[in-house]
Length: 67
Image (cartoon, rainbow, N blue to C red; front, top):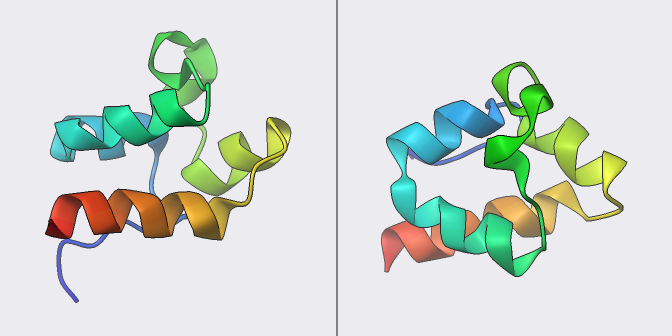
């Protein structure tokens, strides 16, 4: 489906395209948007570094976007 977030997308790219996704990053306790790594790290790498399941984060973000 076009417009869906994937774990290969950059963190900053997701936040810019889908501002509502910030709610999900906050839910997981990730301050990714203020982190220098957010400029080059994709969602999968960021989630794994912090011990979270990237597939679950993608599902949560897409559910919020589609709501």
